[in-house]
Image (cartoon, rainbow, N blue to C red):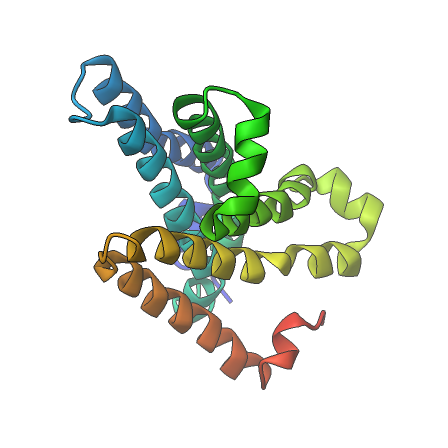
Length: 210
């Protein structure tokens, strides 16, 4: 079957470098705004909030690749799923680092105390910890070393990570009675996971390796 023109375009070698640049745009815009003093009255909070928001968005984009690939008949999209996944991890790491630096001043004791004291931070840190092995195995040599099925089984953690990320965001926003954006992300995540449940024949099958 002949590939569609769009699918052929997605196979071009220059697409992935361009995609990395696109993924870096939100961070570049945030750093520019910080340098120019345009982050408002509380720049630290803005940087923490923005890096966290983009982490969740990139996670949703990562989960959207498989449905889009199938519904649009674009198998080449699969080439970019790991790109978005690694991007989500980079933004999650920056989110934690900006919190550790700008909110806690790198004081480890205060960070640990905050993690145990505040549930939404505990959930966020848990999500970051779960993301780490996925990022560290996001290259072909890791797939060969682990074996395809073991690699797939590990990377199904992305479902739990996305749900924890959403819960982290919800608890943070609920404290300020501002959950509108959270609900939008929740609907998107429900659709992405719901597609997989229906496609694979049940919630339990979502975690099975085929």
